[in-house]
Amino acid sequence: MNKKVSYDFDDTLSNGMVQHHAKLMKKKGYELFVVTSRLSDEEIMRRRNVSETNWNNDLYFVAKHLEIPETNLVFCSYGPKYEFFWDGNDDFLFHLDDDLDEVDGINNMTNMEAFHFPHGNRKAQLEVLNNIKDRFL
Image (cartoon, rainbow, N blue to C red; front, side, top):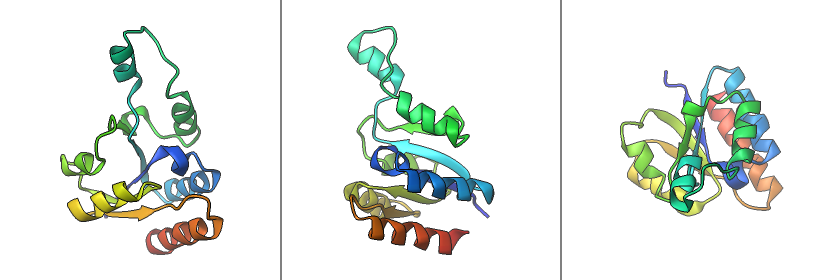
């Protein structure tokens, strides 16, 4: 059985409820990934012609807290996330994201399932997380 799952970072895995959910998934043996629209630090340094940046420190902090290795951090550089899942990475069970366009793109362009994590509606957010938990845990 495939055990890879992915989360967007901003307004998704940056949320404490989602971090708790990710911990449960990890405890059950799932391999966690972060697939974010952000630029990598290397890309930021190249574009800005600087030698260092702290642009993604918040993401690295949460990833370290959840024991997600840096090799499982995917920076899509503002491109559509479904392209990552197309490119030989079609063995994920699901992706959780707050951006409905990203969710629709993944659902329409790949064989995996993406779930929408809605903004500001705690009840709806809990429903999504419980739905995932019921299906995969």
